[in-house]
Image (cartoon, rainbow, N blue to C red; front, side, top):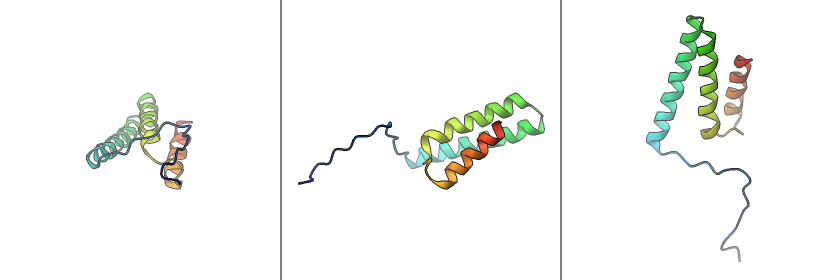
Length: 82
């Protein structure tokens, strides 16, 4: 009994990141945040919004969106985009 458990998953399964991949993900996120900040200083609205959209694309697939910190971060990015 219960040697094998089959579960139906309606969402795509996200692969776990290797430690070196995690470092690259974090560094890319920092670069995009810096780029968004720099575009504000330069008053470049297009680059600012593009940076925020790229941040969302980077966060959504790899962060646990049910965690309050990840959810709050994405809510803040959405608020900045609007």
